[in-house]
Length: 236
Image (cartoon, rainbow, N blue to C red; front, top):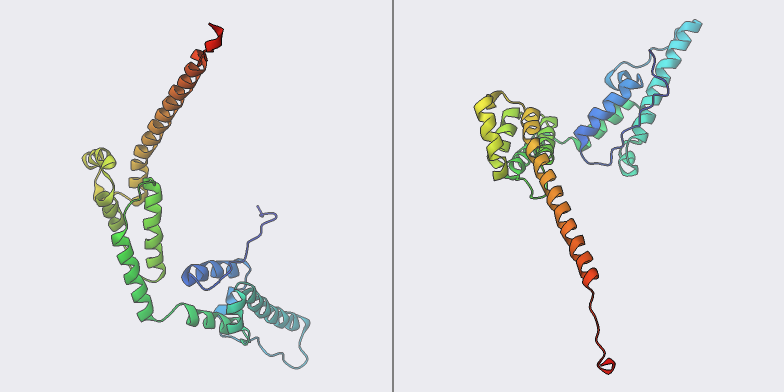
């Protein structure tokens, strides 16, 4: 069944997170049937003498595909980045220029991976967040490492969570140790299991908040009921 009114927004690149943008842009160009114009080195085939209508049509389609792909790249970058590719004649050349400028060499990527791993090791859970939010922050770093070509196992994330989570999760973690093989537990399974602790905590806080509000209202009501009588000395 065909998808009706299906549209994809072109991903805009402003100079940050090149690897994420490149993946999104590649998917976009594939969806538009334009990726081949970037990937291929083949120039449109010159027309022979006395070309047929079919040959002319095919040649026009190939030229149009290249023009569309180049136009997409022009639209997908900020004005500052556009100035670096506006002299490129083909989409393949423009794509390579952006990659060369922003992906960095192998040494640069290794340094980025090292810094991200340090950030992962020093990260701790904030007092105002739950296990899902903390897990998302950890996975964001892990995904950045993987985008740069680094290797990072899910078990390291599981271990990080188990070691750095606050005391309120200890009872649930002990229960998991008794019932599950933690070395085979996925990150999402662990987070979903521990999320119950946050849910109970949230319910308790709402309950306490409701009781406190009730006590305050009762106090205000009582104060209004008794009132403060003002005596006038001239009335006696």
